[in-house]
Length: 105
Image: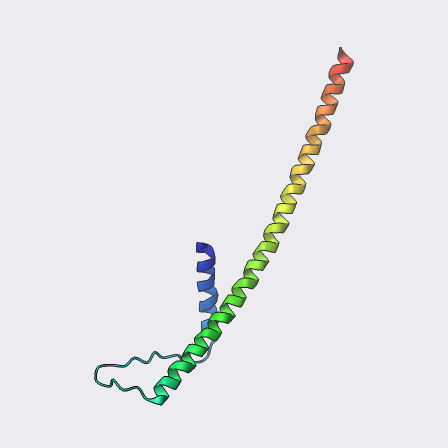
């Protein structure tokens, strides 16, 4: 879980670096408490754009996770194949040793 959160942060940062727009945070201060329609519109646009970036980062993360799963599957199948090969070799060796023991008695 921690790895996926860290990976999501890395992907998000890379996607944000690619973005050419500047996002500003509009806060109402005590000197200007009224919010204009332009401010509200800007906040909505920024929220939409941030959501867009988050969805894009999540899609990239999902594809990376799928790629990791494929790679791990390949590694596990390779390890299983090697283990089976070694077990067969040990079984053949055991048959030879038992055959020699039977012939020598």
